[in-house]
Each structure stands twice: as C-alpha cells, then as structure tokens.
Amino acid sequence: METQKSSKSSAKLITYLALVLFCLVILLLPNILRNSEYPPGEEAYYHYRFAKMLGAEKISDNLSYSGRDNFMPLSTPYLLYILNKTFNIGLFNAGRIFLLILGLISFTFFYLILEKFEYNIKSLSSLILIISPPFIYLYTVLTRFALPITLLLIIIYLFIKNKKNLFIILNILLALVDIYFALICITGFLLVSLFYKKADTKKTLILLVLELALVPILWNFFAPTNSVIQLRTLIFDFGATYGLSLFAILTVFSSIFFFWKKKKEFYIPYFLLIPGLILLIFEHWAIFLLSFIIAFISAYAIILMINDKWESYLIKNLTIWILICGIIFSGASFITHSFNLEPTQATVNSFSYLNELNNDSIILSSKDNGYLINYFGKKNFYDDFSFGVEKKDNLVNDIFLSSKNLEDILTYLNNTNLDYILITTEMKRQIWNNEEKGLIFVLNILQKNPNDNFKRIYKDENIEIWRYNKGEIQ
Image (cartoon, rainbow, N blue to C red):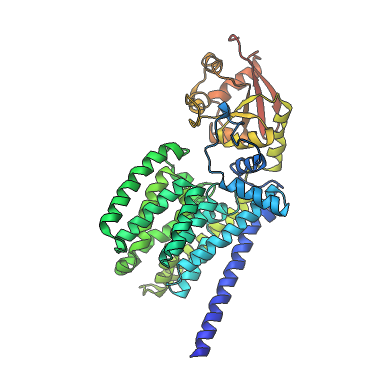
C-alpha cells in the first residue's frame, strides 16, 4: 500500500515537472525565435518608458497629447525597474524574465486549483492552457494584465484552501496593483460565497450590492475603452492577435451535452464562464481570464467524450481527434505568428526617424502606434483618450475614416497643435482596408497636386510621414 502511494506520488510529481518544462519551452520559444531584438507588443513600450523614468520627482505621461497624467497602474514598471536595478540585466531582459516567472507561477496555481479533480483532467487542462493563444500572449508580451491575473489565481487558491489571512493580504496587494481587477475579484468571491453559503447571507448581499454599485462608477474613471468587442477580435483562428482557439470554443459548446447528466457537479465552471463572457463584450482583456476556464471545460469535455459510449466508434475517435488537433494547431499557429509581432526591426528603424524632428513636435497616427511613437520617436502623440484632456476629439473616426474633403480636414486640423501625420501599412489595411478613402484619398491627391499645407517628408516600406503646416487653405 505504501509502495503504491509512493509510486503514484512520484508519477504525479514527474507529470507536474514535465508540464512545467513544457510550459517553460512554450513561453521561451516566441522570444528565442523572434525576428527582432526588441520585445513584442506596443503597450510593452509604455511600461519600459515609465520604468526608465522612475527616479524622477514626478511621474507623468509627458509624451502624450496635453501632457496628461499617467492613468495606467505603475506596478509593472516599478517591478521592471527593481529587477533591472538589482541584477543589471537591461529593461528588455527584465521584462522577459518577469513574464516568464509570472507564467510559471500562474500555471502552477492553476494546476493546484484543480488538485481535487482526477489526474487526467488536471493534466489535460494544464496542457490545453499552456498552448492556448491568450496564455502564451499574456506571458510573452508585456501588458498591464499579467501581474494582476497571476495574483488573482493565487487568491483563488487561497480562497479554496480557506487561508483567510493570506487571502486578505493578497487582495490588498491586488488592489494596490490594479484597483479595477480587485473590484472584479471581490465581486466574484462574494458571489461564490453566497452560492456556497460560506458566508452570512445578509452581510454578503450588502457587500455585494455596494460592490456592484462601485464597479460602474470606477469603470468610468479607470476603464480605457468602452466599446463593444467584435467577434473577429476574440477568436485567433478568425484573425485575432491573441484570441481563443476556435476548437476550444467548439469543445466547450459540445460539453453542454456531456455535462447535462452531471450538472450538479458542474455548476461552478459555467457559473464563472457566463459573467466572464458578459465582461468580454466590454473588456477585451477578459479573454485572458476566460482562457483558464475554457481550458478546464475543454479538458473535462474531452475526457467525458473518451469515457462515454457512442453509437459509432469511428465518429467518436474522429470527433475527439479533430478537436484535439485543432486546439494544438491554434497554439502552434500563434507561436509562429508571434515571431513577427510588432515592433519588428524594420518598424523600429522607421519610427526612429521621428528623432530627427523637433523635440516639441506632435504626431497624429493610429492610437496603436502611440506607445512606439513615444518610445522610439520620443515625440508627443495626439490620441483620442479622454483622460486628463478637457475635450475628447474623435479624430480617427472624423478624419481618418470618412472625410474626403481637403477643406474640411484643414479646417479641423487648424484647430489642433499637430505637426506631423504618420501612416503605416498596417493602418492602411486595418483602417481603410487598402482602399483609397478618407485621409488616404486626400493625401494621394496631394501627391499629384502638391499643397503647401501637406508635404511628405519620409517614406519607406513600413511608414510614411507627412508634415502639416497650419495656414490658409491652398
């Protein structure tokens, strides 16, 4: 008996270590095989720039239009700064190591959270999670979400283990890291406590009402966007940068049939999945949270399919293998896709041209380019965020997309402090669908009929820069 228990423990430990090694390899591959020395992701350069700025008397986003104060949490830049200062490894390497550590921690706590489930379900859930595009993106591309999501997983584990003191401490830490995540976290735990009757119903309901009242209020102050997410941005196989696997989603839908008989055992995953999907409609980062839930549901569904009796053995095997291969294919495709995530070396070279312009110049471009303009071009960026700006200008919608009238464009631009317009090939594809419309239409006309208000001063295969001179309409 003792020998059996010992061999089972050894087998579980070996499996866990094999999964950790697999996770390590998957998270290292995108950086090892990347075609650029620069880390991927536009937002990453916001954090790197602020990490460089630490030590100044006042930390503010002086390279955004209007010199507005910073509105993103600064926990990630602080940790990058400390890691770099301690080991002197450079900010880029600090970012890579930081994400790798968080990725391994989050995987470990996901594995521990599932410890009450069968060994095969826990192992398969972990494998599906590791190769899911959102997980790989979260822990290879520096964003504001990696740290709070990792803390959230630790908090969930402490909640399950009923470690009250540590649970409270980690929740306070999460609030310091990202108040918005902390609000969602507390709301979720209040709901689960009420559901399982682990807390006093009256007190829990009062706290829940207060919490739900605070979320929309703080939403208006802290949420960077308030737009409805499009379906094509949610599924990697449809072209999303880090969307969910289509086959994982199909597995989740198919699971409804298999779980119906076991619905009493399966309340919690769907209980978490539904509000997660609702949150996803408004906040794209919810896809990172959903990837953990979907990994578990997909694994559970596949195991039940394997154990269930089918009328046709051939259809059963074919269905299971299509779903498994599809999930693997999505993960492998994302890894190869991540090698060429912006900024590439060519993009860095192009954006660095902005250094040659006047220091106080203000650039107009797609807001996706803002962090790169700030970091590599060291120039102010005119964007349409309303934080700290008295009047919100929907410039991208008003000018980039619709107007074909030079007079209207110049009248509008004369009311701004813009100096240059930067357009990338990616903007032409995403904003104008490679068609001659909006600002592209006007600028193409100006190439044939030069105008004193606009002059193209730079062009390569990636970007073109136009200088804008205020004045009378020519």
